[in-house]
Image (cartoon, rainbow, N blue to C red; front, side, top):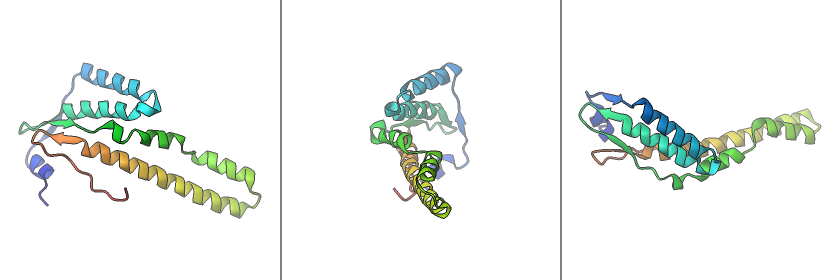
Amino acid sequence: MNTSIDRLVDGKTVAFSSSKSEAAKALLATLGWSLLIVTAAWGLARALDWMAKSLRVSNGTTFRFIGDPSEVWYVPIAIAFLPQSGTLTNFIQSRFEDEITRMVLASFLIFLLYLTESLMLLKYWRWQISGFSLSSGSVLHFDGGLV
């Protein structure tokens, strides 16, 4: 399989180069945007933009980040408001007397919780990867399934 990324790195090196001030600016902007859960995707987009601009291939190819945070802004909100596994087990223990019922129900709900979080994060990762563009015009793709 000879994809554009295979041709890009075939016999070439990819280097990451950034000054301390560029890294500090990206970190502060990312933290600032991420203070509110609603704007966390914009914070991550800022960090990914800095990372992309810091990548260089030995053949002169550069990267940029073109992902639109408005496509995934709801993911951090959904994950932040999902109950934690400890909260679920405490709730179940307070409502059910039978130990087997508690164990089965807790296992099932925790499985659903982790499945939901995994699906949401998969969407986020797909957005991150497909947001990277090469100076040649190629855009990276994430073909992982489920979402």
